[in-house]
Image (cartoon, rainbow, N blue to C red; front, side, top):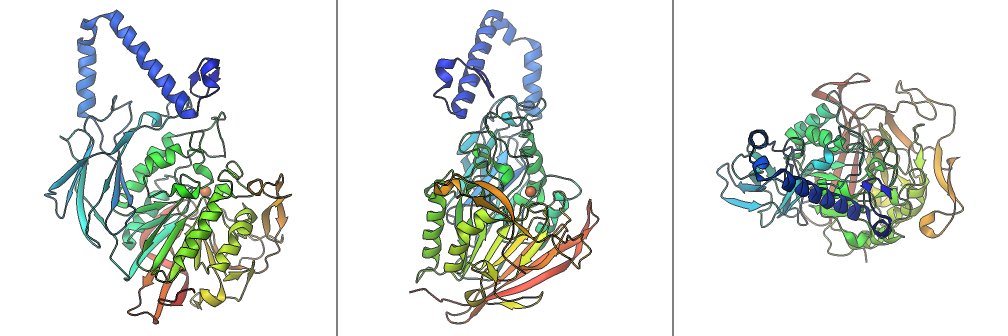
Length: 537
Ligand SMILES: [Fe+2]
């Protein structure tokens, strides 16, 4: 049988996962190679051509890019990851991938990579070498909180990357800032300066709201590999890593463009490249949560429930939503030490942009939980623009909140922000008049909803793009490249007021390029306030 990975006998293929197919063909290819080598004789291997290639490959072995993410305990653990180049350059597994780290550039500690492997990619577009890229990773543990460490990585223990730094999460409640956007891709004229903008804002970490590399420009799955461009991941990491993700924990959610023709529900590439503290008890390989100070962050997989992007619809069988409910209850339980809850996912529960509209699949499944547990902020992407809603409860805005005003999420409701201006081509047309110079439309906002019930809940419906019943939710919207900057002020004592200042930062730009990151403009700002230490009975 012809599979996306090559020809495999029928008696084998019926029980094979995509990973099995990949491993089978790779091992068969290796056996054929060895048989051919034996026929040539040992002298052929000692010949000058192969010797020259080997020496040249070693000399040009690339190190990096590098990227990092918080470990299970952000104050004490950090994932360090790096690429060891592609087989077209490296030609073999890195012989001794390892990292050294310490409080200064003399390091003092070292460890071998715990993971060094490739992503099994089916036969695909010629010239896409990502299947041969080795991705390496180490989890550093036992680190001190709020401490900057120096690190350097190597593929062979001889040649090392330039000295790089990373900083663990501060212990306990503290002031800190984080940034967020999604929908990046790897354009030198937009994504690259947006990464530099993030770095210039000096966040403790950066939240990625999905759609990173766009290796699947449209939704596809096995055996549909047409258009799959896994090499985009290396292009993306080469933009995000240097000066950005190599020192700023890159806390990533999956987007609609992270479902790839690979095993593990299409996420084999994502979890291999981006090592994070995934919580498999969610029923998903890509869902994770962490806390920093008095704020809990929950990275969800909207592909499970989206009524618009349906490739992975229902794959957790409701497990993710059950997990979300339990996590929210835990974060709101007495003694949890959490004041604010921030959810990150890709598709928007509320969007008045004409390109996608709102996703009722997510809204209907998770909105009631966001209401019940008073989720403070939901950050999404998918729509390549900026939009903030008025605070929402039960599917409607509770009051209008202009830029510069303050929101009390416990009484006002949840604020939803689309931060999809991370670098990919912008979506410029909106429902209704915009007042911002962006084109509007007389059509009422639309929402994707299931007809007959979503498949996750046992329904057999199909998604429909309907006129939305949520009225007047959009508070601010701009079709611009922008970055969310959130400054969290920790309270000094329980009972005091704690706050998050949420700002949308816009660098100088044309429709096609970010032209300068110096002196960016604040295009929107709200403050979220809560009484610190408030627990739920
Ligand atoms: Fe996108």
